[in-house]
Image 1: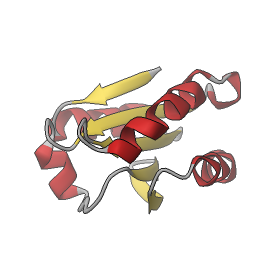
Image 2: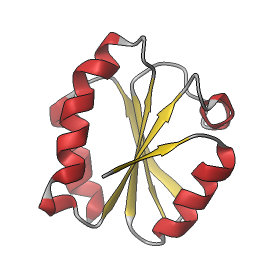
Image 3: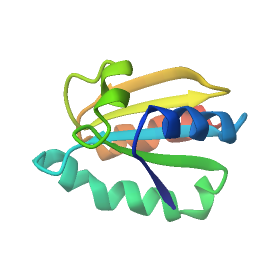
Length: 108
């Protein structure tokens, strides 16, 4: 399941609620072609039993501009990885292999 984040307060609460689970955040936009290309893959990962203990978030940079600004998002898609409220890593682009490799590596 993917949780859609609408503002900074929702983002902060989602990170806090995740505790020590890995959190993956997809910063996206409806007008972004590469974002739309990777969206079904991201949804599939969120439904994969292997990642049942991972929290998947989605932030539309137009709907939640405060979150995009505080996270210093410059291009889409950008993926951020958090644990215990701290950012572990990030990458930009619609590289499915890289997304899954980072998920496997960081979920520990």
